[in-house]
Image 1 (cartoon, rainbow, N blue to C red):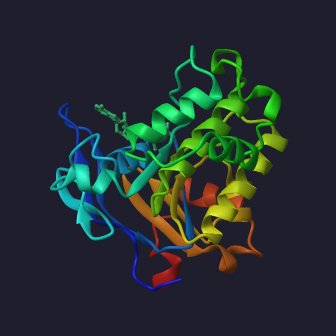
Image 2 (cartoon, helix red, strand yellow):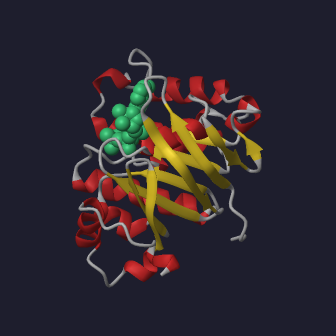
Length: 249
Ligand SMILES: Nc1ncnc2c1ncn2[C@@H]1O[C@H](COP(=O)(O)OP(=O)(O)OP(=O)(O)O)[C@@H](O)[C@H]1O
Ligand SMILES: [Mg+2]
C-alpha cells in the first residue's frame, strides 16, 4: 500500500445550473488498497462527487484526479483508469451474462479474454455455471450487481467507484458483495463507494466519511470508530453537530 492517494478530490465544488450548491469544497483521497465509504443523507452530494470522478459532470471549482489525471481535463485518459458500479447496473437484457461480459470487455479495449476467463470471473462473483448462458433480463437485482462487479473486474482498472452498490440486496448478497470488495482491496484497488448502510460501511471500509449538504463533515479511519456507535455519531452530525472534524480536534 502506498501513501499517495490514487483518487483525489481537491476542493471540489459543484453548483448545478439551477443554482443548487451540491458540493462545497470537498477534499479527500483514496489510496491503493483502501476502501473509502461516503455516508450521508439523500441529496448530500455523494452521487455528484462520483459523477465528477466519472466526468459525467464538470466541477464548478476544484478538481477530481484519478492517478494524477484531472478528470475534466483528460476525460478519456481518466476513464481508462476507473471502473464503475452503479446501484442499477446497465446490462443488455437480451444478452446472456457471457455476452454482456464479452461486450463490455471489448468496450474497455480488453480483447485478450477467453471464454474460460469469462466463466472464471462469473464464478468469482458468485454466479454459478447454470446461469452463464441465461439472458440477464431474468436476473434478480443481486445477480445483476454481480454481473456489474464482474464487468468492473474485467476492466482491471486501478480504481473502482461504486454508487450504493449494495442497496436493495438481501443480506447474503450484500455480504458476498462485500467479500468481493475486500478481495479487490487485497489486489490493491483504490475503492470509493457511497452507501446508506452504516453497518456495512463500518465493517468493510478503511475510512468512513459523512457528507452533509455538500460538505464533508467527518472523515475517520474505521479502526478509530470501531468502539463507537457509528449510527449515533451519524445522527449527531445530521442533527447539526457542526464542530471541527474529529481528526482536527
Ligand atoms: N442534475 C441535477 N441538476 C440539479 N440539481 C441536482 C442534479 N443532480 C443532483 N442535484 C442536487 O444536488 C444535490 C446533491 O445530489 P446527489 O445526487 O449528489 O446526492 P446524494 O448524496 O447522492 O443523494 P442520495 O443519497 O439520495 O443518492 C441535491 O440537492 C440534488 O437535488
Ligand atoms: Mg446518490
